[in-house]
Length: 181
Image (tube, rainbow, N blue to C red; front, side):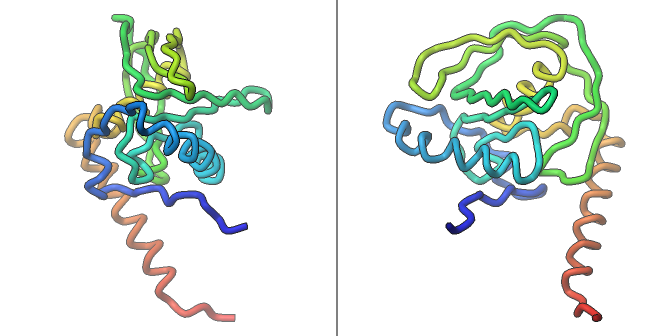
């Protein structure tokens, strides 16, 4: 079987800065095909969350899996929106599959309530705190063309983006060299 895992877009790809459109009923067949491929891509990376725009799909679709104790806990959020956020903030280190190897501390609301649709189009709500709250907010940001580095000071953001560019150049240089053996 061919590998049908989509490629994850890397900063500075302009598609990561575009606001994704809402999923409508006519998109349901595409979503049914897309979601399993998104999970495979996320697990292969490996990561704990992935949004449609990260694979070049401009639809408001998020997959998450914050497996605990080796037990998978997949979540699918279609057209998610934060309907309530706590005033209390919580800082935690974040990374992103679209900024490989880059991490920084980001402050976000500690608790959120998120309304979304499941794969059957049913409206649902999830109350989240801790890592799940941060992950959901991070992925919803992707749907709006926002990256975790946008929550940093200009100085910190520039440091992360310069380091990413350097890492990508070094990786590319390493691939361009003939192997010795």
